[in-house]
Length: 231
Image 1 (tube, rainbow, N blue to C red):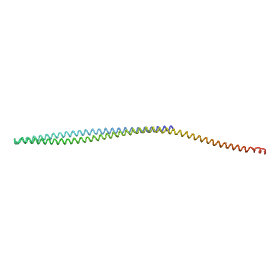
Image 2: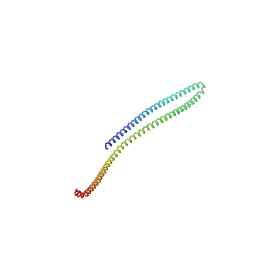
Image 3: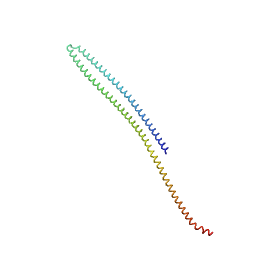
Image 4: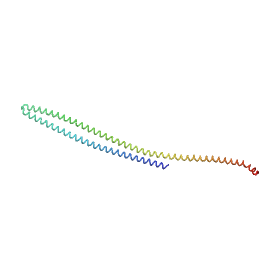
């Protein structure tokens, strides 16, 4: 009985060890996958940020170049207007120059305000897009960390459960052995009492047969002299 319990416990321990090894391997695989996922997305995010930075820089350079060209064109137009005004009457030249300069200054100022506003709108859109991408990546990272924490808690709970199962099996086998010993002693007592009662019963029967035999002998004794005399 003890060997069977020992074999059963060893088998259970081996089974629990295999299960623990399997869970450990699963956790290692999950952690490695999470690391690969994190590395892959980190590289991808860095690439996207670099790409957006390059696009933003090229856009900024393009806008600056166009503004510069526009200013140069406006200055060239102003110069042309000024040269054309010089051909006019000397009296009206100063008036026309001042009017053209004022109008050109107003136009340049309005165009600069328009360009600045468009540039600010484009910058705000790009910043919002980058913030949205960064928020999405942060949420994915938080989800991955939560999944890793959940896996670790599952593994810890299963280890605690396996140790509790081992302790429970040991505590249940000890009372089972004790109950088995009590049952054996009880069976021995009942067999011994039955044996004694059987012997008593046979002894009474033998005593009854002996008493009957003595009665038969006493009943036979008076007949012997008669039979002997007859002979």
